[in-house]
Length: 310
Image (cartoon, rainbow, N blue to C red; front, side, top):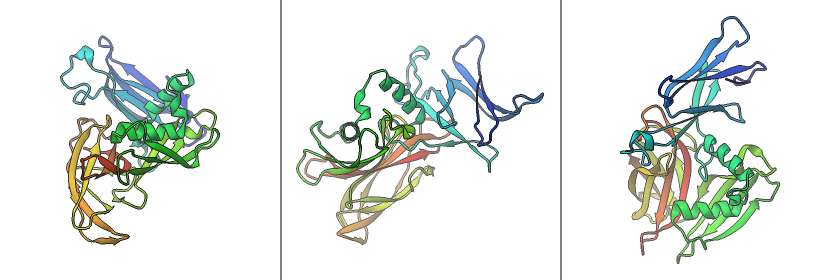
């Protein structure tokens, strides 16, 4: 049992976990109020977390971990081979009178607060020190998510110093053309004393934007993705929905429709996605990839953090 002030009042609540006797695999999670009284009050529960874990975050939210049996890493694996890969965060809502699922602002290197806090512990022990460097984090994002070369050039536009809380970094592709992204980053939990950097948005400058959905919205399938991009009346690229493992679970080709000024065009695409997780929502990313028509590579991109409902 762990205790913390979880509901925004100067009283403690208790996080209680119960692991199923005899299996060692499934976990039930409960939060109780009035824990010093004769009759504690249950505020929240989530049950049946496969190989589950739960903890209280540094932001006094509830973090859970479990196995998504249908995910890309666990599908068709034997029971002994499945791993924790689905992480969720719950925050107290006075209006709802319970804890509701929320999204972590980060896109990369972590999609969830559970993973980010675990990463911070690893970095504190001397592992992956690049996560304390804003321009290196932006570079690794471009390499991992856009398949750009490790030689992509990074330039710090603002912040990024050893005691800064925020940073803006541009990354320029080594491919011919105008392949540049602008990455916005912030320190995990505003820790300027060695906190790791988390990318919270990826923009394509004034080349392209996503106007809908809004950042960190709760989506349902199908979702309408709209914005502006170059190539009026022609092919722009594609919109993709990325799940909690950065796997594509939905996509649509997008074409320009009407002029939007500055040589751009508007677009709107309905994207159907299929989540592998059916026990709630998962954290993911909506991305617009502007393609280099000469070789099909990604010339630039816009990325937003979203909460993906079923």
